[in-house]
Length: 115
Image 1 (tube, rainbow, N blue to C red):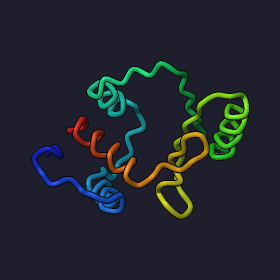
Image 2: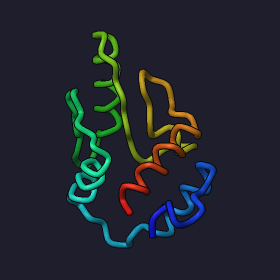
Image 3: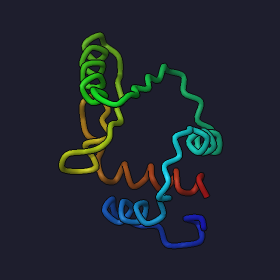
């Protein structure tokens, strides 16, 4: 079911509830679904992407990389999970949390591309 055919959630809280309801219970460790949405949106990043993986320390590594790269003059975006208080904490650009409206817009576009 695509967002085009139904009324899309309007707030970040509504989107998060919707996404929790449709999320499969089994975790898909691959990036195939993400690559499919990237391709459907025509996203071709012209910048390096660093993926931090492992059991422990990902948040600390991301915080250090964000600080180092920002100090070196790079424009830095970070996505981390989980959050402590609000979902917006997960998405930062230049150290600033993403606003609710920006996240709703992004999630709407992603859901349309995801189908």
